[in-house]
Each structure stands twice: as structure tokens, then as C-alpha cells.
Amino acid sequence: MGVENSIRFPQNFLWGGAIAANQAEGAYLEDGKGLSTADVLPCGADRLERSMDTSAMNALMNRIEGYYPSHEAIDFYHRYKEDVALFAQMGFKCFRTSVAWSRIFPNGDEEMPNENGLKFYDDLFDELLKYDIQPVITISHYEMPLGLVKKYGGWRDRKVVYFFERYAKSLFERYKDKVKYWMTFNEINITAHVPFIGAGIILKEDDSKYQVIYQAIHHQFVGSALAVKACHEIISDAKIGCMLAGGPNYPYTCNPEDVFEAMQKDRISLFFGDVQSRGYYPNYIKRFFRENNVNIEMEDGDEEILKQNTVDYVAFSYYMSHAVSTSPEKAGEVKRNIFGGVKNPYLKASDWGWQIDPKGLRYILNQFYDRYQKPLFIVENGLGAVDIVEEGEVINDDYRIDYLRDHLVQVAEAIEDGVDLIGYTTWGPIDLVSVSTGEMKKRYGFIYVDKDNEGRGTLRRVKKKSFNWYKQVIETNGELL
Ligand code: BGP
Image (tube, rainbow, N blue to C red):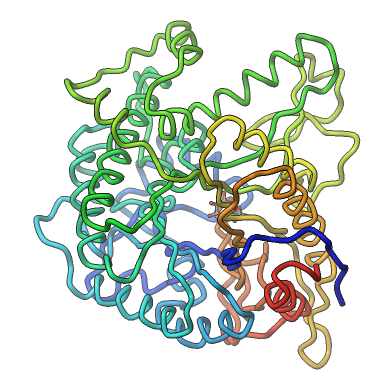
């Protein structure tokens, strides 16, 4: 099982997998953890749209009703030893997860961290290091303490910058000997599309939407830069990156209108990487701000903080590409997702309508490397699919192997193109709760977890066919894909 690949991956390439605290841990109120934004989000196909509905979200602030798969998730909190042992069997060199901010600061604005929360991650990191698996840690992955939303309106309030800085510093101090790869905000560019998930923002009736969102994003930029600064001061041999949702925007036709529109869409997304990697707001975004009545309030010293504390590497997720048309009605079916865009006639899509495009990964690796000239790290890639458990506990997920292989072939090509790549972590090496639906049905894992959308199941772990395939990929450092 495996196709030969003649292009060499770098020595010490960080192969692994990635999860996020709120999608895997469960134990949502254990050991002093406070509620987080992720704990109150409703489930279902329209989850992201609902997170932008002001009255629905206001109602959720004070009442959790119904069943939330994320409250137990896959119970990683109690079963991490078993799971880490399985990752070690696959030969993982690294493992990306996030820290749940509300385990460390249950309301977000306390003076002192919660010792029980810190202890959990100490134990988890020790377990990983026991197998020589490097922890790669996202400080904020799509969640923040709900207390900060109720009391301060999330990242709208400048004070949250300092609560975040305090939180980040307590992680660096505590784990300085254990964690050498960090990133600040998961998919920070998604905040512009789903501000509750990215920044704990519930828009009010009289809010000027862009003003509120981009001001909050400015606060995140400053928080991120302060975290970079603290990380460099506290852990001299650490690397800290930003993390973007990657996905190129292709013009639907060679009509210059489409070509330009695609470039603009790329810019609106890459703006986040530009600020965090280059250290200043690019000129093109200033026009967007002018035309949308956005006036960023900066404090004295902000520009200096951004300039002085740029990231060491650029991490990103990659699932799909987008096609952009200035006349979408002519271009065919308009995809219903948060990015907009039209159907690309050259690509197939996943069951969730995500357009599968391996070459787009080579494209974006080159695009990012040309733009940033910094090491890159692919920290999410994978296929969300419905898996069938056949007789004898067999799961033949050849579609997943094909997806990952096709993407890795393009990763190898990009390495040959000269891109400096630190590593590759697949999304959800073990099945977990989906961000876009809040459900279990959309699975990414090499390891199946017996749990369904309604919470039925034993939570037992079962290796899928892809488990041994990925093991072999790592064992041969990508020579057999
Ligand atoms: C990214 C997120 C992840 C993850 C992934 C897959 O945007 O960073 O947290 O969930 O997408 O998305 P989904 O779970 O909706 O399939």
C-alpha cells in the first residue's frame, strides 16, 4: 500500500496530527474549568450562520439547553494516554493541540491561573514527550472564556489584550521546558467571517459591523505581538507563528474583472498574515477601511509593538480552494459557505461541498513563501467524510488515503520548488467534533471514535485503514505515499 515518491522530505520534518481542546477534550466543567464560547454554540448545519444571529446568541449567553457533543467530545481529557499511545504507534514526530483558555483562567480576568488546568497540560505534554512527540501548541483555538464575552464584549474591549497576554505568559512560564512550537490564534482571518467564534463578538443592532470586527482584530494583532514578545523573552529557543485559514482564490475566468476580484479576495484574507509576519498594515487594506468607514483606534506604541514582534513562521490550514466570479449568476451554482465563491467546474467536492484541490496546496505554499520568506507549517489538512464501520470493526477509508496522498504529492513538489516547510499535521488524526456543524458525523481521523451525533456510543477507539498508511508515510519520511 503506497506510491513511491522520489522527492525527499527534509530530515527532521515534523509529521503529525492536529486537534483543538474544545473539539476533543470534553470535561467541559471539570477541575475548575469555566465555560468557554465553544461550550455554548448550538449544533447543526447552520451553526456558523446562527453564531452571527444577534438575538439567538444573546439568548445563549445565559442558558445552555439541549445536547452538545462538545461537552463530552471524545473524552480526550480522560483518555489522552490511550490516544497518545496510538499517535506514537503511527510514529508522530509532533502533535498539535490547543490549550483551553478557560481551564487556565476560568472567567478570563482572574489575577492567578487555575492550577488544576495547568496540571492537565503538564501531564499531557509529559506523555507526548515520553514518546519524543513535540507538542505544537495553539494558544487560542476558536474559543475564549465566556466570562470575557459577558463582561467585556469579547475582543471589542482593549482590556482583553492584556488578559490574553497574561494567559499566554503563564503558559510560556509553565511549559518553557516542554513546548518549543507555539502559535497565537487559530485561523485568525476567519474572525472577519464568524466574529463570535474568532473573537467572542455578538454584534449589536446599531453596530457598524466592519468597525467592530476590525477593531477587535486590531486588538488580536496587538495581543498576538505581545505574546510573540513574551515567548521570545521567556523561551529563547522557541518558535512562535501565526495561523491562517489557507485557500487560494482563483478567478473563474480570465476576464480582468474576475482576476482582480480574486486578488482582492486573497488580500482580504492574507492581510492577517501580512500584519503578523511583516509587522505593519499594508496600504491596500487602508483603502478597504476608508471605503467601509473603518477607523482603527490605535494606542501609542501599537505600531512599534507590531513592528518589533513579528512571527517566526507562518502556519496554515488547507482544505480547499475557491473560485471567484464577478458575475456569479453566470458562473453556476453558488456555494453556500462562509467564503462565498462559485463552483469550480474542474474540481470535485467533499460531501460538505468543500472543493478538493491538491494542486491548490502547492500553489498556496509557493504563494505564502514568495510573500513571507519565512518557514511555513501546514498544521491542518484532511477530508471530512462519513465513515462506515464494516463487519469485524473494519473501516476502509480509501477516500481519505487518496485525498491525503494527492495533497502530499503536491507538498513534495512545493518542497522541490524550494519552499521551506517545517512540517505537516493532518487535521483530526482521531475523530472529533466538527467546527462548522458541532457534530461527530464529519470525521477526519485515522482513528475512529465510537460516538454519534446524539451522543450514543462507547467512545472506543478503532484503527481505520488509513492508520497503517500514515504510519508508513512517516516511517519512510514520505518516500512511500
Ligand atoms: C478549521 C478549524 C478546525 C477544524 C477544521 C475542519 O477551520 O481550524 O478547528 O475543525 O477547520 O472543519 P470542520 O470541523 O468544520 O470540518
